[in-house]
Structure formats: structure tokens, C-alpha cells
Length: 571
Image (tube, rainbow, N blue to C red; front, side, top):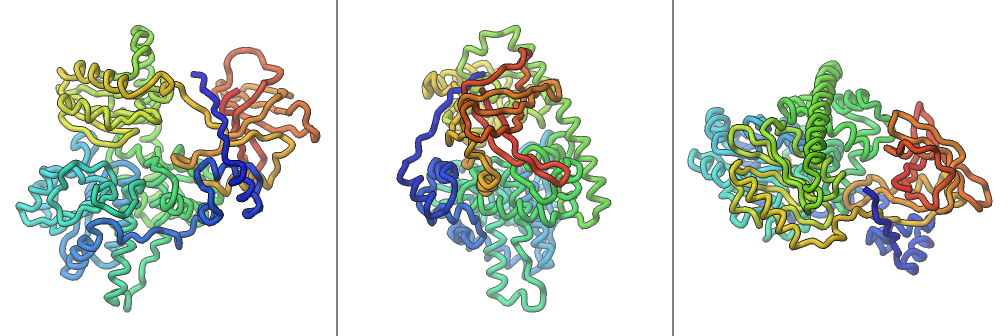
């Protein structure tokens, strides 16, 4: 699908001011202003991204109540259960709490439900079969729990306290927990609404460590270095696709540096499996390399395997578990390919579906653990909100993904009467629905999305940060671009535009991709640059040139060296 090019026009005076004060390339200043980073102080903080600039975590509502209850549990050696989610955000949040509580000598265990057999979140059955049976005194949820009213009520009935830490959209009524730490609470003044679940858990540990310090707890034992666990905070933050701005950027950047310099055994094993350069780990390595393998445990088996990988101190064990996760990831990819093929075949037979604002599809044999990934792939290809539902056992369980600017959660709220349950946010959600209501839901959802959108919303956009001449590209500029890492939601990798491009040479690599040597007409230096156009093999003969190209500019690291490379977005 062809994209609409939109060339961003930052305020010229702001760009000139930042260029002078930061002594940077005008392209870098333009990118910062495009990201609404205008003042020199904000720009400096953005580029340095120091832990010293983290916001005060005690502003999170109920934090003081939670800390008081946890201190009591530690002091009286009560049994604590960490209850997590099965994605990377939940896995890493579980791990950092588990390791911290073990370091203070607490009686702690963890539990992550099976994605398919148990589903998402803390449920009544977990209280009876897991917590009460094990004589748990305190449950602390991570990355879940905001909607677990029944489960928390059941826990209260048997004398088990619950502390919820979460970051998902809150229901109107809070669960009756001891504390509900969720920056999405309407009455939470923190302004931390973009934090991932692992970020909320990390802030809990910052506050807990300080309170323990105030009580001289660390007088005769080493105080945990929380910076060292930022590697896990970065994994969860990047994998959950939360905006990489403000505190999230600080946590992700700090964590990536730690992963590159001193990874824990489990992460090191996965890096070796993925072939990731140990000194230059970026957000792409996490999102496309480490995270899918960690997620595969919860998708096709059980997420506890990923927790065991992250907590192990033994390299042999890490390699063994890492290889198991890699096999699971290959299985996941195979299932994903089959599901995508089924969807493509169905759409070929029913092309009228592609004329709608939304795609709502269901089958009884779709794998629940893979639905979200496939929904995301279909959404990106057809650029519309997508809901995929697996209808095994008479009840539909679905995953939904949306496009920028189209609020998926609002759409599900409008259809709440036809849904058994749902949860999520504007871009991604999950739901349960009776199979006989799917057709009515499809119609309501389609109509709602149609009412809140306009045709332009369904045209994918490329946002051009800066028009760049080949003569102006240098090693120092690429280094400056890299200083803007980590890239992701809220801080996209910059896209540049160049005009009048000649193709010096071209060849197909890996069947689908085109590698080219490019030169710009009219340039003074005659510079040439290697470029890769993923999925750029259109089957046509090599073009002599392009009127314009949209591209990303990176270092391509290989065998200890690095060369400049353009990654073509579109021509």
C-alpha cells in the first residue's frame, strides 16, 4: 500500500537556536523540534537521558500505602506471591520484584497464568487454588489486576491482602485492594500514564528501597543496585511499545547500555542466539530479536520458562533455556505463517471485506497465543482496525489492533453490550464474546469506526523529518542520529528525503530485498551510499533512478566493523 508523504516543517527559529546551542547538525535540531523538544534544557535532558532525571515515584497514588503493607510483610516474614502477566512486560516485572524480595530475605514466590488454559489476569480460581492453598498472606500483581474485582473480593474473604501494580486503562470502580498503583487512575497525580507495567514495578522498588534505607535495613547487608535491573526494565518497556519519552526513554536507554556492556546470563544467551552485537544493542534488537523469543514461552508453552531464563545465574542453564525459547519462537513463526495464509485466502474469496473500515475475522482453529501478532501484521498490511477471534469451545477469544488516530478501546466500549469482557488501550486490546454475537459485534464495530473516522485516516503516512543532500551525510551525522536512540513509539527513527537519485548498481538479496548503490545527481562530492530496500523486489527490471527516496540512515555493524547504510522506506 502506497503511503502519503508528509514533510514536517519545524519552526525555523527553534531549529536555528538548538543547532547553535547544541552545536549539532541542523537535521538533528529539526528532528528534536519535530518531537516537540524545543528548549535547550529539554533537548539536553533528552540526549543525556540520565537516571538522575527520573520523576519522583512517590507521586503515584497509593504508593505509600503499598510500601507500608510490604514492609509489614517483610518484617513478619509473611508469604508473598508475585502474580504476573505472560508477556515480556509482565515477565520482566515479575522478575525484578522476585529478585528484590529474595535479596531482602522475604518469603516470596511467583505465579504467571497459562495464556490459553487460564487467560489474562488475577481470577477467583487463583485465589483458592494457588494463593490460599499455599497460605499466601500478600499478593502483589504486576502488569495486571486493575479489573480483577471478583478475585480481590475473594482474596479479602479468606484474609489475603492484594496490592495491584498495573498500567492498563482502569475501570470506573477500583478493585477493593489494599493499594492500587496504576498511573491510569483518574485520581493519580503522577503523570506517569505512559509507563509500562515493569516501569510501575520498578518505581515500587525505588520507593521500597528508600523506606528500607530510612529504617537502617541496609546497615548489615548490601543495598541492591537498582540501576543494574534497568536491563530488564528496558526489555519490558520496549517490548510493550509504550511511548519512549520522558522517564520511559531514560529507563530504556539506561537498560540498553547495561545489556550491551554486562548482560545477565539469560539475556546473554538470547543475544548469542539472535546474533546481536554485544556492544551496540538497540531497540530494534529487543523488539525483533529478544522480545519475540521471551514472548514465545507464553504464546506456545508457559511464560514461567522465560522468568527462569532471566533469573538464572548459570550460563549452561541459560543456554539450554534460550535454545528452548528459540525453538518455541520458530514454532510460533510457523503457526503465524499458516494463519496469515488462511486470512489471505479468505480475503481473496471475499474481496468486498477490504472495502470496509474494519476487519473482523474468526475461525475455531486459530491459536490464541498467536492472535495478537497476526492481528498486528494484518493491520499493518491493510491499514485498518483488525479483530481476530478464535471460536473454540463456543466462546470467542480475540485480539484487536488499530491504526494511529483510531481509538480501538472506544470502539470496544461502544460494543460492550455484545462482549463478555474486554480490556486494553487505544491501539491494542483483547476481548471475549459469545460466538452467536460475533456478527452483531462486527456490524456495530464497523459502524462506530466509520462514524469517528474520515477517509484520510485509512491512508498510511510517512513523516519526513528532513530533506538531506548526500553531500551533507557524514560519519558524525550518523553518530548524532544514533544519539537519539532508543527509537520506537513516541520517538520514531528519523526518516529523511533525498531527490534526484541515480542507481549505480542493484541486486536482489534473500529473494525479496533489493541492495543498491546510490548516488545523487548534481552533488558536488559524488558520494555514493549503500542502501537496502526490504521487500523492494517488485519483479521489475532495475530502475536507473528515483525522483525521490524516503530513507533511514544507520550504521550497519558487521564482524566488528561498521559502514553507513540507507534503509529505504519508500521510493
